Length: 358
Image (cartoon, rainbow, N blue to C red):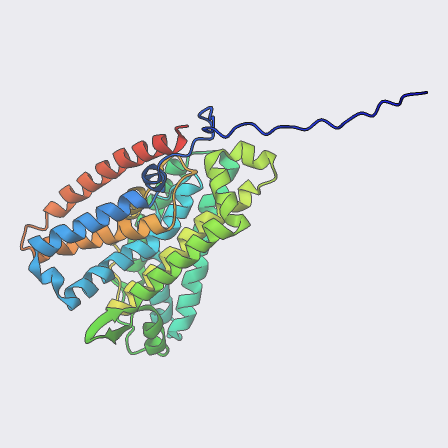
């Protein structure tokens, strides 16, 4: 009799349940730390604290018209702070942004008035000039490899001198002529400098544009390939170029976005006051950069958001107007600005270290 031997399949016995082992590399950080690692969370908490402070220190702030005025002041800073923030995330910054606003307004005003054209001709030419200034900054930066500090400082000085010299040459004065009675003025004013009523309170159209631009910038940063390029060139442009990111295009286009912002704010100023002072704009570039830094953007690039500068600009508007409503000496605004800026830099440094800590 022959015997056959049949193999029986081995049965794997599952291990007894027990506590999961972790080597520390996959351990998830607490929710609070993960939230604080977001660039806009710190400035949001700061904006809330500033708002609450002035609600108690300056009772007029509680009035709807006062809050509308605060939002208006914030929007004129915030519209420019957004492209400045995107540029900073891309690793650069623009010292000519403040005077570029005035250059745009002067171009539209003088071209329309001196040549007796429809104001829309001046508006379109001013847009082209603003984009050209941004493209020149970006092109010179890319071609020479010079720091953006030096490139845009040179542009700042050029524009400051040109604004004053050409305005005096053309108008014989330091300010442009009143264009409020020219063709197309009313239509342009509706777009750039009108207001509407909400609950009996007049709200400036710039507040709406500010929020629209913020939403668009957020979408671009978080949902598009271009947003990835911005973070990549800001983090390490050589590595970005090695993986196929168009560094030259990204840098130049970011400077042109700053030019677009300068054009828009310049048109608002022109159609709000009907005339432009050629010596204005100096120092505003520091306000825009500070709003972006307070909003969580790093001067070293590669980190930040579009929402953060919105809260940063709101803090500026809140402090600027809150001091007035509280009846304090407005000279204190610069002191508050310095405190907010230093505080934001320290917070951003801590957030960056928290975000990179394993």
